[in-house]
Length: 280
Image (cartoon, rainbow, N blue to C red):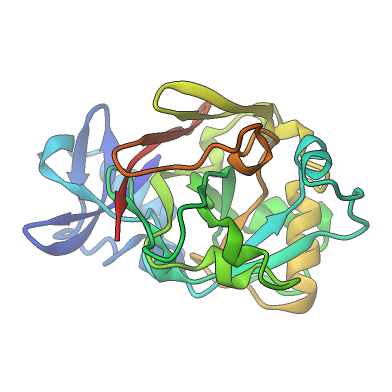
């Protein structure tokens, strides 16, 4: 099942993708949002409901929102693909490098990602994101997938000079509308093997990043175990698992996203997250 969050006539709604159409669930007491559905433990109920309904909206009728609107926590993992670690000139990490993004730093599929006026060093980072399905604290790696609701594409858009103002990444990772998440949440049962997906990032059609999700240094169960050791994750919370090599700052000369560009993050079995770049 592909859960989608969207705006229709200015109202935030939730639905299920059916081909290129959308089943609007907002009038069926299924839940007010993706996060609300997860909080109610209602994924199975929503799937049964959707199986009895027909799409009543075209994909062209809606404005995509991040597939989880206003997650309580978005935890991002840096340096989690070997090639990316090497292009940063760092040693392989002993533990996951975890930093935080704020919900308002994300837009949905099809929306503009915003380059702020204070910097031209706007970089792309295509990632696989994990969406938590139920309250998770001190979860063992062996049980971690029981807490996963599903997956989506994520672009961890980064303002590189601000990222390097200190040893912490926070400033460069949280500019308003500088990242994106979507296009939808694909539930865990739809993915045969999460470690055999192909992740690619294209800038104006040119391939920039390409890797298998099996190349993660710290896999998804390890990340869930580690993150839930220091915090409680709730339904709708997100873990961004890291980006492969090929980011813009590591290229010679560096490649930065600029207004008018189109950036795409695609993951097999999940979909394509596409955004345009605009100036603040």
